[in-house]
Image 1 (tube, rainbow, N blue to C red):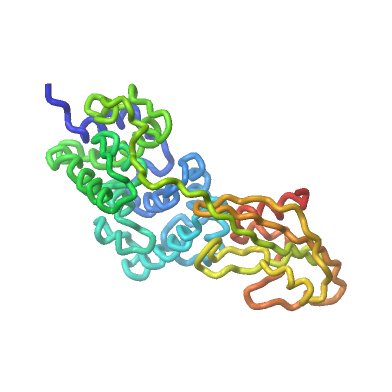
Image 2: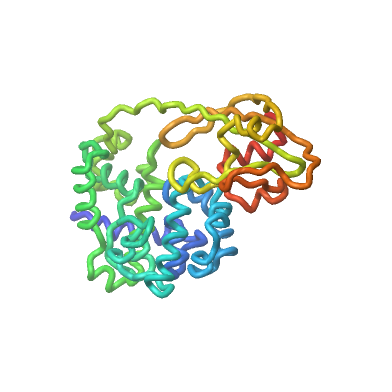
Length: 350
């Protein structure tokens, strides 16, 4: 008996077993769909939900986001990580307002021209908002496809990526399918994401609950966890050491804005120069216990240096243009890296 098309099985499965109650579903508003797709890049759904709702409360439209100051955008993003996404989010909103009269383009090809929107994200937005037959290929989809077709080539190679794009496009719902079921593309796209996130997981895939089990080559081989294949050995993360000056003056703390690119780009951080306290003639900071902070490509070992000053003069000590004395009760208005936010919020009890 011929196996039913992969797309048909995924669409039918998604209707009854997929995730159908997420706050960004059941809308064709490209602003809301785009916002959720950017937030969901390399971040779990459970983490994204609160951020997504707070963003919409503050920036209900793309125009509101475009008109906001980048510091406010970063402050709402703080804790989600991968801060280039927030900077691109802001730049994309400005581009939509300036170049597209405040309306997101409809096609995946046009969406891909906007800042921070790659091919897979553009396809997802087009599929969800206008039902366009466009293939996605995020990490979950790569895992589903490599297992279903037992692709033994190294997934990190560009040739393998091209092969997966070909398969992703080939397995799209047919035009007849999308004509008969107008929501087929949206359900297929969501279904692939749901399948990879909840069933065909990286560890302990639940093959018995998978709608593709009957035709999955990796399942037939009895080793789904052997796919995807990564030929290169996992390298140990390098370690970087960083000193942070935690300088407070009365009820203010000194922060400096980092350059837009690189680690914590555009965020407000404690100064990295402990010599600053001496330059301002405020005294010697005391070393605190170091602690580790894990990032994607390296491990950071942070050593805070603490100095609290009771300043009796009328004006705070003068600092450089990229530095600012911030009232401690107003820190929530600034985008701070997670370890800095935790440090400033724990009363120095490390």
